[in-house]
Amino acid sequence: MPGLATVLIGDDPASRVYVRSKSRACAAAGIASFEFTKPPDARLSDILSLVEALNRDERVDGILVQLPLPSGLDTRCVIAALDPGKDVDGFHPVNIGRLWGGETSLVPCTPQGCMILLRHVLPDIAGATAVVVGRSHIVGRPLAALLVAADCTVTLVHSKTRDPAAICRHADILIAAIGRPQAIGDGWIKPGAIVIDVGINRVAEPDGTAHLVGDVDFGAASRIAAAVTPVPGGVGPMTIACLLRNTVLAACRRRGLPEPLAPIQ
Ligand code: GUN
Image (tube, rainbow, N blue to C red; front, side, top):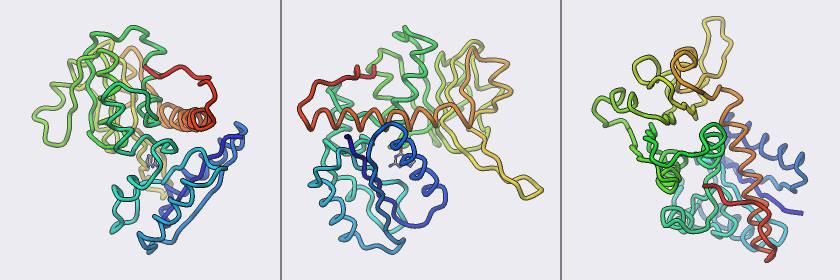
């Protein structure tokens, strides 16, 4: 049975929810999951010892360290300690390099999920103009690598970009990953575009309740675009599906078995 270890450091409520939902998905898919938690004031040396033990653990095919880490902990140092073959997030420098080099790698889960959604509605994306809003290490940058590999013409828009709306208005494919509620709406979307909304933002109502919205104004995008992903229920479930996918791939590679899953292109 493939096995996934999750490592949650600190007490961020959203991270706790994400890790729980990943473990539940493993149980539903027949993947063993092992949850490890550390307090917010955990020492870097303790975390590195845990990662090294998981690297050696024969039951564990994939290791996921939930991000963000509590402030003061060096994220790069923790990620670099992972066995690249067990790095099911695809965040290790070896996997980042392989991704940009077009080699087989463990591809970050959210970008992988975006590509599957995109290919579903637009099988031939070669030559399309793709704009990714947000240059995070988790989503924007690896997604740009996948879109380049898929022969799109790619622009990364970020907080210092001049007139981002004007650039987005030219996009056949627009992917929003900035973490700003409904920031992208009228004036940002080309008629007929494919819009993928990676944002998950908790918005408080005056009555004290909260609900989730994306980075895209869904109403505006529904009127203008050819297709738009909802929040919740769009990219989020794809991220979890791709985590399971990477865990199965890592398990097959570690055991020298043929890979049952086609590469994401
Ligand atoms: N925090 C937000 N998204 C992710 C993800 O895909 N993987 C990990 N490890 N942490 C995250």
